[in-house]
Length: 168
Image (cartoon, rainbow, N blue to C red; front, side, top):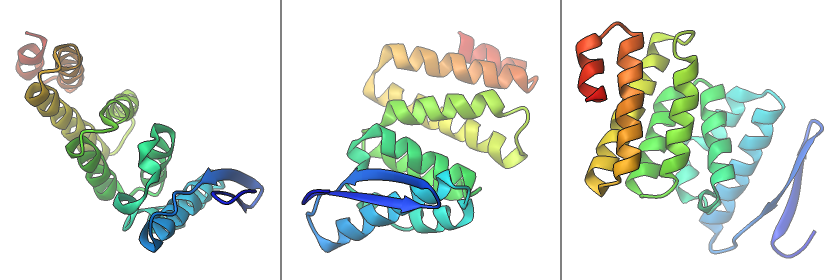
C-alpha cells in the first residue's frame, strides 16, 4: 500500500500492518507476529503460537495495545500457557501494557472455573504479578482492584482466609 504499510491475507482474513523498518530483526519479528495473529484468526492456533513465541520481544508492534492483545490471544489459543505467562511478565517488567495484562487476566479469571488446572494457576500467577507490580509502583487504585480480584479468586476456590486477607 505504501512504504511502511503492508497488507497480509491468509484464508480470507486480511489486515493492514504498519511496519517500523528499524532493522532486519524487527522486520522479521513484526512479520512473524502479523502472520501469527492472522493464523490465529483463521483457526491455525498451533502454527500461530509457534510463530509468535520465540520472537515477540523483538517486535515493534507492542507499542500498540491492540496488537499485544492479539499476541496474548494467539498464545492462549495455541495453548502455549508458559509462553503466555512469559509474555505477560515481560510486558509488566517493561512497565508498559500493564493494563492490557490486567484486562487479559480478568478475562481469563471469568473463565477460570471452566479452565484446566494449568489455566487456573496462570490466572493466579498473573494476578499476583500485577499485585506485586502495583505495590512497587504505588498505584493505589490498581492495587485495590488487584487485591479485590485476588480475593474473588481465592473465594471462588473456597480459600476463605486468603480471600479475606486480600479484601482487607
